[in-house]
Length: 73
Figure 1 (tube, rainbow, N blue to C red):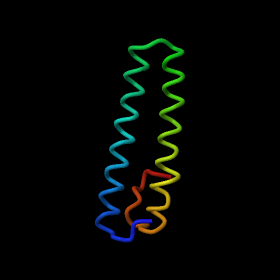
Figure 2: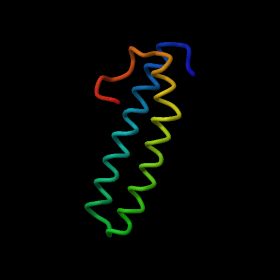
Figure 3: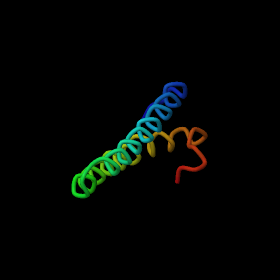
Figure 4: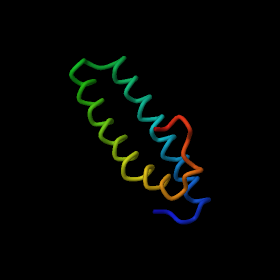
């Protein structure tokens, strides 16, 4: 994973912000779209967020444990 701590910190920040944006998009779809559209959208966003966590953030925090936010399990 990323060796440079400054770059790792920036990647962490960007990925966490992407997660927040994706979460907001789910709420938008929930409010404005049909139940089936919401269900399908929520499922796809969940896959994306899971991939970000498992494939990017977890390896990053394994290398740079001090960057891991306390509220991220």
